Length: 206
Length: 108
Image (cartoon, rainbow over all chains, first blue to last red; front, side, top):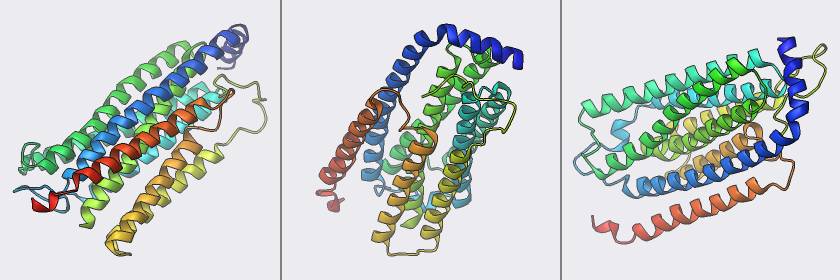
């Protein structure tokens, strides 16, 4: 570990200036992506809020939402955002093993989240609450499903970064990549907090 | 953003992620507070909606400052300006859509 570490430090000193500028540019580019993705979610939220009381003959939000299930999803995603932050923190301090461990924990929590959400969707759809049933359900599955797809993609992406960091250590482009996948993961948590508030909490409030 | 391992001494005290711990505790407290307020019907529906939305905004602040390190950058904080522009668009899209689409929906 220490040997790998010193080797990577030496590498960084040599390559530092070059990578430094490129990393900064990549991170800024990623912030631009996050902003545009935020606007995508804003459109889906606006649609949901407008259509959420157009339930037709289908179930209302209060009929459908299960408090323990969505609370568990929220706590799991918040915890995964924290463990992802710990991975970035370990990386900043050059502790590769610890970083890999926290990334694996984050991935497992992400998988648990996607699993819970998939089981929630399946249960509702089998009970007749399908996407075609009402305007509310169309908007609900589109908004929450788009977030779920983002999380699933994040899991695949983070797994690929994990494999790269495992094989190459913390040299070269790896720290920038870990930092960026971390930003993506925290962003998904931000979007979920609003799904939790606007979709689930306001849904059971009615 | 110091991406690469710093040359801090590794032998002595191990660094502890205090700000991450504080951020995590705050985010759990904010979530539990919102959930409790809704389940206990702590306020009337109007103020309750405002209350949980404010808690949601605070959650975003926690994520941005404690986890995403929005304030850490070496040059001018262009990403923060970008994000602020994004928030302006979000407010325009969401508030504008709700405003214009809620006219006349009483009929349905």
